[in-house]
Image (cartoon, rainbow, N blue to C red):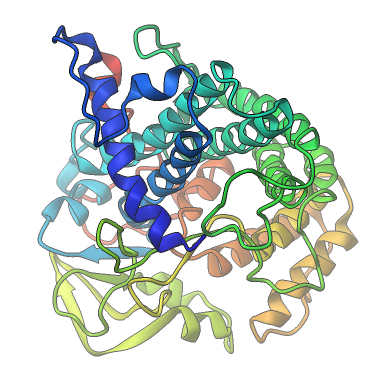
Length: 439
């Protein structure tokens, strides 16, 4: 099934499902709209079509506010500036004039809300599966494996920005506590392993279609995405051995296409959304500008500089900040955004190999990345510290403006190494949990 049709029907459904959740705490006379699906309609004896609509909604929700999360973390990590009409993008996020981050504004509330809307739809799917006899147990296993994998993936994305997450959210009237990074990551890992068991029991094909998972749309191939996510989780837990083991079941391939992996897809169809990280070249407003340090620190001949960014016809300035280059990461406003591609998995392999003491393997992997960027083989010392520095540098350039750098610096205690662009600016490396979550 083509993604455009999937998302067009699903966005409406996802909104209705969420609206039903939001108003559930109030008392109204029951109303039934025969033209639209309802939350009650999928809680008991959901049809396969209703279950499939939930799948579409989960995928649609995963894309929401990706741009806000990415530009927010990228600004804090001094990868980029977002020059637009909102001064908070060049003020709050850079700690201008001693300011602090706001826990009740778009850059803190929007990414959190978007991730949890996707998680909510996945939890609704899991509840529906427990209360329907319309499909077989083998089919149910496929739906469960998908839903649990996506919940874990979204929780990891929350942790990267907020350093904590609320894991137990299936019952909106009985939410679990917000857990610290390690506890929440452990819960996500458990969920991924449970999901793998479901996928292994799901037969040879899914009973639903997926958008953006070309080549990963059967239980066996989707399990490769599950293991890729598990490898990332293990790496973030500092467990190199487990990360390497998980990579063995993923689509990691040192000799493979660096771009392979599931993607968020977009379209211009009615009801769908576009890629918010695409910016019109040489636009005077709403532009992602490359931080000068990213350009200055690049090795001579690194093709990632010229493929990911472009030189503006005229340098631009806003709020005392300036830049000569702009993003060229996406060719159009319907270009896909990677979830986890092979290039990232090779970098995961390099980092996990360092953690496991396999330094030659790490160097070999880093050379794959370097060579792909037009650079010669690594010529530095083969020590843990030297290879770690090289690995972080390759992540910096391969994963530029993809919501990685701020977290990488935080987990290696390197945030203090970031440049200060203006007198009075500060460095932040974690977003505040939204105010509404503490009420």
